[in-house]
Amino acid sequence: MANILIAEDEKPIRELICRSLSLAGHTVQQAEDGPAALQRVAEQPPDLVLLDVMLPGCSGFEVKQQLDPALPVIFVTAKNSLSSRLEGLGLGADDYIVKPFEILELLARVEAVLRRTRPENEAFELDGCRVEFGTHQVYCGGQEVPLTPQEFSLLEVLVRNRNLALSRDKLLQLAWGYDYEGDTRTVDVHVQKLRKKLGWDERIQTVYKYGYRLSTR
Ligand code: CA
Image (cartoon, helix red, strand yellow):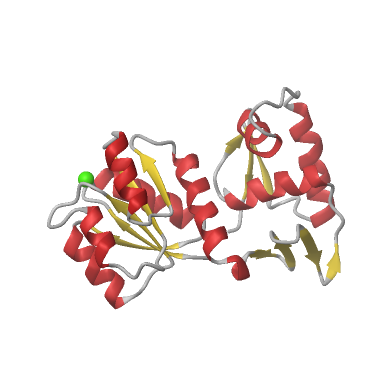
């Protein structure tokens, strides 16, 4: 998937983000201050930087100014004021996320930025099945598997949050839209169809009394 640098001085937050992105299949690098972030980027250029604004050494804004403008950046900060938000976006950041945040929200933003910046890499493969996000096509063993738009949407949510347990409510919210007032049994029905069509009985795991998880390991 992607190589992501996390520049964050608060260790618990940095480690939480690292764990979540690693679980999602990304390679992660860490930096605990501004100069270290610049050094990591020089040594091994990442696909995306999650950049805390209040960093020791030099601020996230200062780090951003020294980076290649083409390198995607999401600012992560506790500073919730409009002026710092505008300063961040004025510096050409791709997105901005305010602490405290939900980890699913962070993952969604990361995926959205990667999707915008690396469209050619937009596919996911598992057990001989290939999910192409650009065209919404799925191939298993080289054969196209027809999915309804709703099935594809659910599959996309499971893939983008792979290895995380997602509640039925969360799946409804993410795959059907925030305002969808469906029965959570709708999720069960669609999961059954996906399992059958892709042969992913073992991959899409039931999380007892909660929901589902797409396991890639
Ligand atoms: Ca900080």
